[in-house]
Every structure is written in C-alpha cells, then in structure tokens.
Image (cartoon, rainbow, N blue to C red; front, top):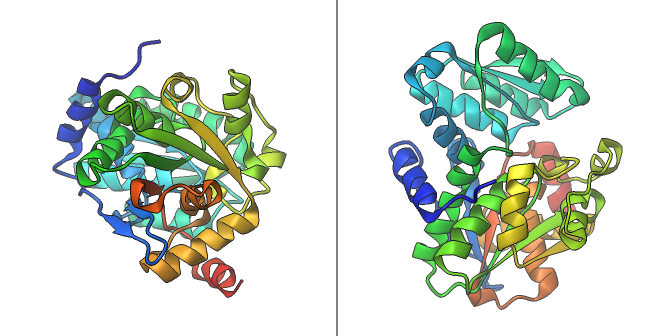
Length: 312
C-alpha cells in the first residue's frame, strides 16, 4: 500500500480551498495550549475536508449518479453538506440509536437519512450503493479522506511554525493518519500524538502491539466520546499511523469531561467530548503549552448533554 505524498496533501488543499475555510488556532488562557478549532466549520466538525476531497475526486459521471455514506454523525453531516454545495444527491446511513441532533442536522443539509441498527450501517450503505449506482464515501478508510484531513496538518505548520507537539483524536484513523502523514513528511521534528478514550482503546492497543487490534462494539460504545466508538482502525489509516505517529495516550472519561469544561472556560469554544480528547491528552502528558497544538475535531452535541458536562 503506497503512502500519501506531500503532493497528495497539497493537491487536496488546492481542491477543497474554494469550499473549505481555514480554521484558526485559538489559545487557551491561561493554560496556553493552542486549539486548532475544527469545530468552527459550518457543520461543526473537520469531516467536511475529507468529504469535499472525496466527492471532488469522483468523475463527473459518478457525481451525477449520487453518493452514499455511513456514519454516526459528523461524517454524515460532512457528506451531506459537501453534496449540497456541489449539487450532488446524497444518502446517509446512520445508527438508529445515535444522536437525533446529528441525524436532523444531516437531513437539514438535504441528504436522505436511513436509520438502521448500528451493526448494519456498512452493509446497508453497500446495499444502497449497489441498488442506485451511488459512489461510497467512506468515513475514514480511504486515501481521499486522509488527503483531505491532512490539510489540517499543513495549516497547523503554517499557522504555528514553532509547534513541537500536535495532539489528535483517534477513531477510525482518518484524521490522525492524514494529519500525521502530512506533518511527518513536511517537518519530521514535530511529534504527532494520538489520543483515545480508555473505554475505546483499540487504536492504542494496536499501536502498542504493532498490528490492528479490534474491540467489540459493546466495549467501545461505553465512552462519552460518541464519535470515537469505532471498533478498529482502518487499514489505510493504520499504514500512515504506524509510520508517522510518535505516540498514543489514553484518557479517562472524567479527563475528557474536564477538557470540555476547560475549553469552554479558557477558549470560549464548544467542544464535543470526541473533540476534547486531544486537550485531555496534552494536559495528561504535561506537554509544553506554547509548543503544543490540539486538534479540536468537532463541537456537535446537544445542549442538555453539554449543560450536564459543564455542571460537573
């Protein structure tokens, strides 16, 4: 399997530039950590980068037929939003026990939402693709997705040339793999660190074992970080993670909640638990704040859940 090259990331950046705005690095005060605020995108998450790159990489004929994706939420919104902007028909398969807020947001961008039991998401997606001739936009295990997410890494290096550590949430690996490969090839002196909940530690275990380790959905489903409940890292992300990621760290549920509260208090940003794990990891490792950037991957959670976390 070939590794994405610097040219792949610069091409993706150029491809999505007309549609995806650059996000700022916001400083936490007084902690000092820099937050790459991917929660400030129109859909509230980084996922539109990969979605735009993937859809724009299709042929005109493929786009004319439509696209389909499966997701618990943020990828769903990313595909729905990109498809709407590009005038492409989209269908998204989502778990019937997932966030109703994310399902409604996906519908609001014009996509058809198909609800199924969580274990049937992938198979239903393939069924719809076959029935209608839709192109499948994978959530993380695809080169176009990694190339799109890698643009975050390019922006970080440009915005924070002094950076020495970049902390990134890890789920299926599309975000971490892309960011790590982009940064690792542009400036190998920067250490990219993956952060994962203790209750969904498949990527951490994989990293330590040197091979992909899968966990049952019943285990990973326990974490409050609903966007990080994937049972195993994708094959394509794993090739990039195993080569370019310096280390991984696990964080507890309370450390994640503390990070959500700290981001709100010190950076005035809304971070969902999945997006706040990067900050939890940096704080746990006691990384030098003025040399560290944490990717806040998303800020999509319902107000009741957010209020409960903030209340402690």
